[in-house]
Image (cartoon, rainbow, N blue to C red; front, side, top):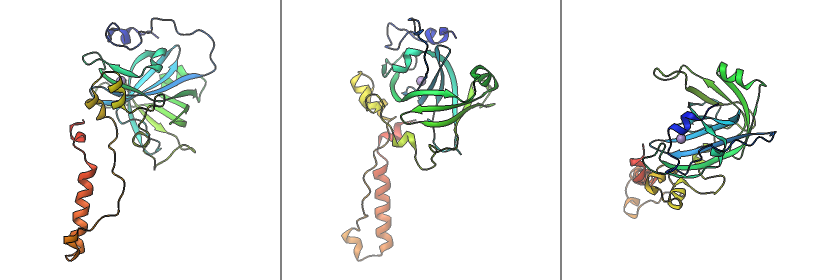
Length: 248
Ligand code: MN
């Protein structure tokens, strides 16, 4: 598969992303790379990549993966990326294609669940097992008629029911850090001279620790209903820091 589209969009004199000029390692490999890169570009998304035929097949998932088998996550197929891209974490300069901060959110290997990957891709129904640090077990990417007119590139990522499925854990919220550096997006941006404020809008909001609601002294003699309302509205404002308002 050609990397022409990937290279056409980027200026490697400016962006630290790999050009993919070096030939992919030819040594026979028993495992295929899997990586998810959290990318705070013009919109936050998760780039889901699977090694296949010497490149990384790539999908951009706006909401990121879900461990809940009842949840289908839109995955827009994008251009193949070079194998070396799996190791890229850092800052793409603003003004360049995909300008913003990139985090290696998950990495590991993947195994196709049917032997003929080309046929599965052609059919638009790719079943596979992930061996990542955050995502494990059986998943499917299924092509959909999609949104709007560009139907060919729309897929859905869905977790299969197995021991790694969960309807309780929101994996993108609860596991927000890099699996290689343990950094949040804002920390990667800071270290790479990027836009820290913009990157921070992709990090989860820190919730204040749950506290027993305090009844204000002045309300103790009043109705308990008022006191509950007062503490409830305070909790809501604490949970909504200013920077969330600027995220899109
Ligand atoms: Mn991206």
